[in-house]
Amino acid sequence: MTWLGALPFVAVHVFALISVFFVPFSWGLVGLCLASYYLRMFGITAGFHRYFSHRAYKTNRAFQFFLAFLGGAAAQKGALWWAAHHRHHHKYSDQPEDLHSPLQFGFWWSHLGWVLTPDHEETRWDAIRDFAAYPELRWLNRYHLVAPILYATAIFLLWGWPGLVWGFFVSTVLLWHGTFTINSLSHVFGSRRYESGDTSRNNFLLAMLTLGEGWHNNHHTYMTSANQGFYWWELDPSYYVIRALSWVGITREVRKAPLRLLEARRLDRAS
Ligand SMILES: [Zn+2]
Ligand SMILES: [Zn+2]
Image 1 (tube, helix red, strand yellow):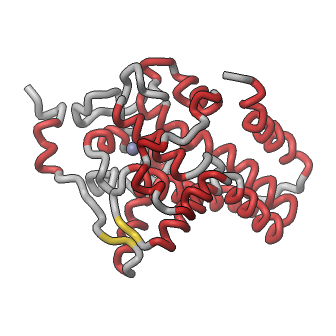
Image 2 (cartoon, rainbow, N blue to C red; image 1 turned 180 degrees about the horizontal axis):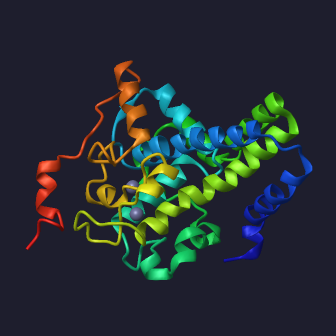
């Protein structure tokens, strides 16, 4: 890891931490912070993850661009970069080639170390040829700061400095760590329903922080499923929105895991 490369990441943390003491506090701002967190988390989970990485459903070209923009506003680089690296994670889960396996390289590396090294800055084009065919997605991926800058500007124009601090900076730091928990904590804490061939786990708390991504053992078992909560009690808000969008024709061919076929891989039924 080079400290120079990690500088913007560290600087945003420090800025968020200090600046909250220089703007007036209100619970409305905390609400704005959470709304901005969950709105962009949807862009990451329903967009970057379930759509761009796993093609778990289909949509039109305009909404596809909107998902790339909304996920991009979370400041986790572009959709093509994100999805290509994520496909690589599934291909080599917890093996030496896995870029962010806590089993292979330790907790902190899986949480954020891997993002900060210059080695993983380039988009893995060979892993994302399908979506790289769209010039507007390549553009947004190349100029990946455009989405977060426009998003932050809109918040500033609507809510001024206090809004920018809480609705963008604090919210973005929480969003980074919320997303990273899936690479780190959800391969460490939680229960395992299926033999998925890796260390992935199901964790209710992480699912609530990430709009349903915490059902990570389910996800590693059947990764092209649009729903990651397989049973009604496994709350999965991203999926509910994807499903609701299908009723008005925005999403279609929403894929679901064939639970009966997965029975054989259940750990509690084995032996
Ligand atoms: Zn994983
Ligand atoms: Zn995945």
